[in-house]
Image (cartoon, rainbow, N blue to C red; front, top):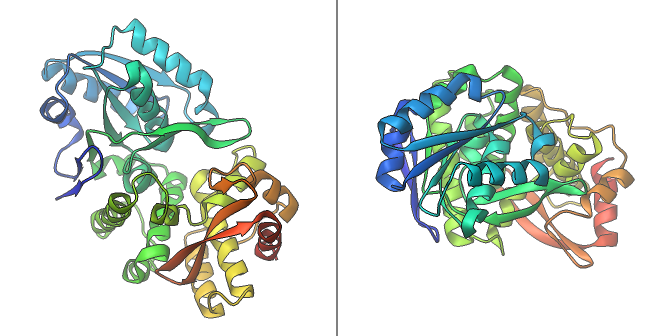
Length: 353
């Protein structure tokens, strides 16, 4: 269907339905070369697709091995990362080997970080299998694992050699996880493209005729932002709309609330605070609330503002006594503002109503 080229520190292509899962080996051989391929996946995805990917890599001449871990955010830890690194060493991987991340956002983050750090860096191919990872986490080179204190606190910027998006894989995605990914899709419209947001006001569903167009547009928006600010020193922080409070919600729920649902609520809370403070019109906030609810997301949280504030203090965007927050003036119009911690505490109180 389309190829989106990303001109980052390591240039690469995002292929959207230009290759299928059965062509992973051919693609990997073409862009990465190498002596061996190591597939990282989880217990949800591996039973569905690991055999197909392994066969494709074998046909491309790779010596193959794999590492499969328990699915879920709770596994995105230093312990799982260390076990993955040990498995890579036991498999005899070298710097010329390639890691294939086969799965959703958790797999992509962990596998990318493993590739970034094994022998100080080997190649990585991202093969996202969830909507969230297709439009967001597989693109842009942010890799990480969590600590008990917060999400993604240990990681590295590490661009892949390629991203292969086979949209047919989304057909096996449970409804909850498809909807989970829609939060990140809506985020792109909210921060950068009102036309995209308008397109999404009729809820996106699996096998939707708009799906490929929406994925491509989200990837293009992220490409433009990453090319301008690869290492998140400025404009790339816009991609964190809803994430500071979303990550706090995830942590407060002990990760029982999944990422997309938490971020959707985080976007709503920020929009509420922006409306209260006169930064955006009430109609813009209401428009966001209406669309989020149409997808099945909540615009309120059961956690009190004090708990969310404390959980957010370990956010990566905090610098000393201030924290950068993504605010909105209207759909497609977002900006970053640094708040001192006392002001941020009041902001969170406004967000929670």
